[in-house]
Length: 140
Image (cartoon, rainbow, N blue to C red; front, side):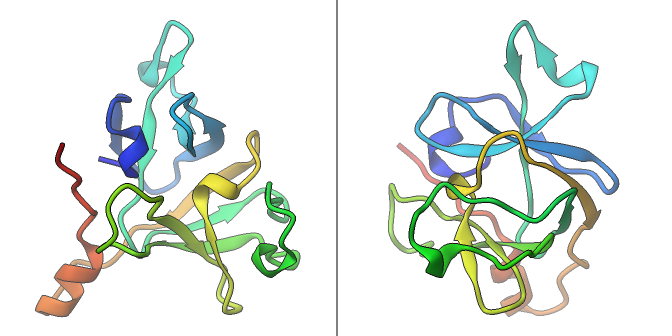
């Protein structure tokens, strides 16, 4: 499952090399969608869920929907997917780490931007790595 607000949307895991588009799913959040024919049902897209540690590259520098410049990555086009504030229910958890110390919630990324999945995280070897790569599961 993707971020909690996408729990009612059809979803599947990302694949290496896959082309993604940021879109609004009408649930109060933005997320990644696929444009693969198999993932389209009428006018509904499938949400593509990333594992923590997945690396992506945007086609262009990322634009955000927040006016707080502290969130704006400066001409960054590559990022690593993270989940933050996992212990706090019913808030957005999906975030992008741009490697310059800036984390941006995925829901603040402007829609229409395109990205490619570069690399999935390596298989975890320690309990800490398992915990880091575990997607938040929200029940209820």
